[in-house]
Image (cartoon, rainbow, N blue to C red):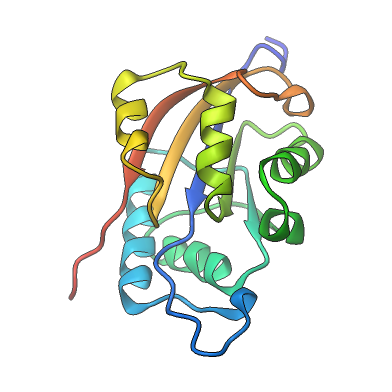
Length: 177
């Protein structure tokens, strides 16, 4: 089976709940306590679902870095993490271009980013295709700690609008200890 015909998985994750700015530059905002719990819950969900990315492409913002770190404390794992400013400053097109360039021969890629980019990219890539239930959940909003699981058959370098199916949409919420 060639890698082009092998089904791939793309997980788009919005960072967890961040603290209000409090005079900090947006890039430096950290996760709120609830955000840390929710990110750990997201990691637990990824682990339980057997979703193990070969590569994580993470925005350089502090809250996205902390989201992935907390997800790992919850059970998520990966071999490689790349921090890309393009996911922070760029919109859907820049994030998609970063995915095309960085994903290589991987099977499963997880992108930790921001809204509105994560919501727009999910909608543009799936274009209504996939699970009706997942699309209905997504239509309620791509909230913090939301995860969109998309299926794609092809080379990452060729991924484009309308080439994926939305398989799942999950919102992770942690509980106070």
